[in-house]
Length: 103
Ligand code: SF4
Image (cartoon, rainbow, N blue to C red; front, side):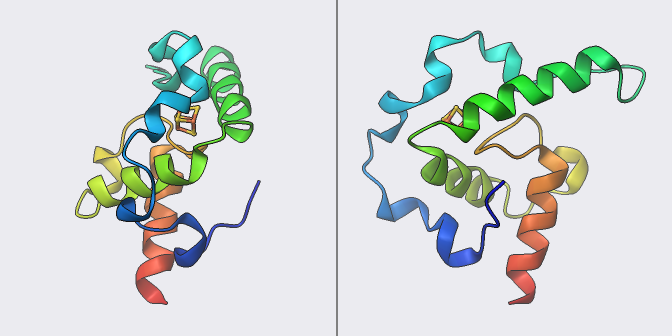
């Protein structure tokens, strides 16, 4: 997976406003990006998360997607970051945001 830095994921204003029209996830059920597990890391959860991340990995608008998620969640706690965006889970985005703040 790409090692994102603050400069590599960019800002929300540097991308075309219609970037969402090119999103790879438009061809799939949105629930795939919101894997839910009531019992921790179950096999189904892990498989669903891996499938969503694989699609994100080949998405042509991964950078603006991640930039928008990070901007939207700027003040959110780890527990309030839901879904997979830009190929990252909520807790992974929290880690990214923490690293970016330290730079
Ligand atoms: S990076 Fe993933 S969640 Fe974001 S637009 Fe692309 S496929 Fe959808």
